[in-house]
Image (cartoon, rainbow over all chains, first blue to last red; front, side):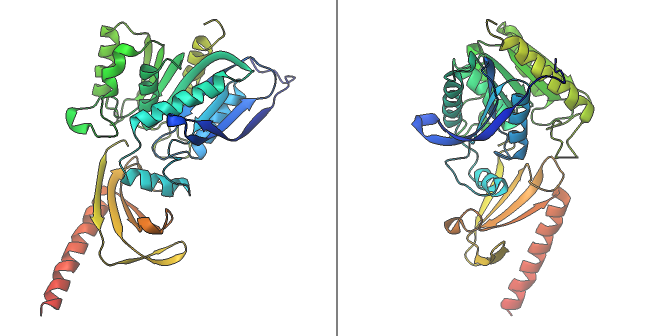
Amino acid sequence: MYRTDDYEGMIAETVPVAGANGDLVHAYFARPTGPGPFPSVVLLHHMPGWDDWYKEAARKFAYNGYAALAPDLYCREAHGSPEDVMAKIRANGGVPDDQVVGDAVGAAAFLRALPTSNGKVGVFGTCSGGRHAYLCACRSSSFDAVADLWGGGLVMQEADLTEKRPVSPLDYTKDLAVPLLGLFGEDDRAPTPAQVVVHEEKLKELGKEYEFHNYPGAAHGFFYHDRPQAYRAEQAVDGWKKVFVFFERTLAAGA
Amino acid sequence: MCTNIVERAELRAGSGRGREGWFSLAQAYVSYDHPSHIDLEHAVNLDFVNEAAGIDARVAVELSIDSARSLAMAIMAAVARAEAYENG
């Protein structure tokens, strides 16, 4: 609980992080000042890229006591305005899943090596980043918890598979070994409510630890206050609370 | 990508006006995915680019589906008349 006589401070800056294949990629690193120990979160950005919203989200995590690291998943492709970079990535059909997993694992190692770390690292993502977060939690042992916020393309059909996205993340569910939080809008089309049900049925069947919350009156991206058509204040406020309650429980030292 | 809907056209001749002025166009991408500016979840995004000239050699247009259809029909109608004109 915040008190008005608490000291608070934060440092936020761009740092290089070793990602997939040891490649150095840029990452936005926001963390509280002080000795810690702090839990950590890797933020995997959405399809529109490494943009203002994600840097603001990293600072929100830092304000709430987390070391937060958001790697630029498009760093190898190009640099310029986030819009121009997104257009290039969109034209190229996205970035390879394997590369994203490597970048996220590198980001987790960076955070865990900090002297201020409590040893726990979560992964958070929205939109394509939600899908990536789930993929990373299933395909690596680097994370202690995962928050998937409206990750589209998690339940894929054969025809949806590409060279860059060769396996449906749903097929990795058997390998998920950490708690999962899922937040979804009932009016979303990527993922659709039916796809969320398919995912939930798989989690139940395999006995995985998860909690899903489906928000009425919300579609895709309902946290995005910079997108008036998508933003839903009431659902976003509740959703952020659920994110922090979840990570407080799963990333506490000794959890 | 959220939708995986993207089409590419090679442009043999064309010019576009970007932030630095006119440049030669080489490719156009037409996608249906998250836009940057128009306040829609997904839009028909037209990116007129020259990939060899750098990432900011781009003219961007974002349209609703019905607007994109209107534009496509207008282009096809104009192209048909232009071909008739050129062929005498």
